Length: 428
Image 1 (tube, rainbow, N blue to C red):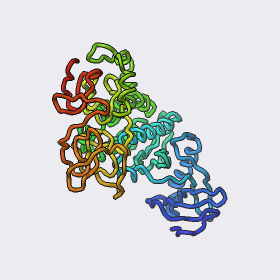
Image 2 (image 1 turned 90 degrees about the vertical axis):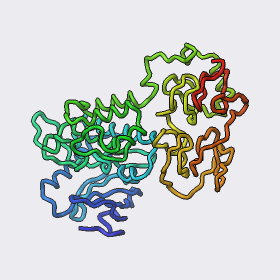
Image 3 (image 1 turned 60 degrees about the horizontal axis):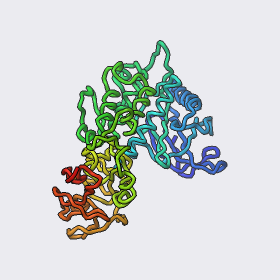
Image 4 (image 1 turned 180 degrees about the vertical axis):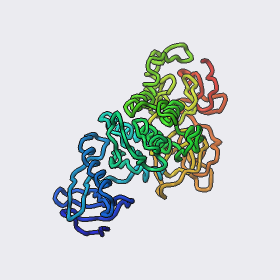
């Protein structure tokens, strides 16, 4: 039965159909008693009794899995002859969100939440069996929740199961009717691959799959190795379960954790935390340079616009750091604004504009000499609107020293390298 807008079902007033599948439809509705918006999942009347039992099992499992990243069930019962599962109403699915540009920081956060949800299910001996972007629901503030446990299986020593799941995100052994914890790990790996590359690998899952070049642009080598391990064809070569996957992801998520236990040495031969004048540098130039980040190699203070670390010479030293811009360049991972058509730092381009709004910014200090006189920020290498290379050189506020290689401002008192061209700074 199809429900129309404003039609009542028990106390709920239908607001419209959100999704329609072969087994059930999902409707937006309002609960006048609680004063909230909800989602109503209603199985089709013509499904067989065993499939209806799957929906009842979904309710029992969802109630059992109390976790911040698992979609809770608010109510489940027969209403006016229909079996109705009531849950909180999200904004959209992860699948919907992946149709738009996603920053690297948000991508990492969403993957962390997805892994946490599946890890909680695995800790309760439950295999989800249908991990895909459409079964992750997004709520405000990028809060992700895993839904749809209709195909979930309880892990037993002798498990009999069908190849239930969604084609495109199903593990090879699950397709043959043998789901296991590593099957969910494989599906999570496919979801993560799509998050960072925009593509979904296909059978026979040979490495590197389609979209690998974009994956390399957006993900650090250790994250790529993580995804590759999750996508191994042999289950024994993958992570044992999502709990092991979660532990491994926690290690690679933070640059500081990755470097833990390693002695970080600067060109001066001194550990970064003993660098003379570091506090003086931050006091004098930290604000002007927006040195809010730490180099991923030596952890010295850097700004996102720096091409190289001025302390140790590392290339793209802010890779993996959280940006203060609303999005990331998929090529160099530096922050970009939503109205830019090209990356101002690395020449990367082809961004899809998400609106016609022009965003003002106090960091705009000059104008490009192109036709529209587009505003520029210090140390931009390319105009973010016309892609023209910036010919002018930039100075550091409060300092007149310039690099002999590129002419941009440098601080010879503190740095060993020019952060804009990697030229050796005189005297270091």
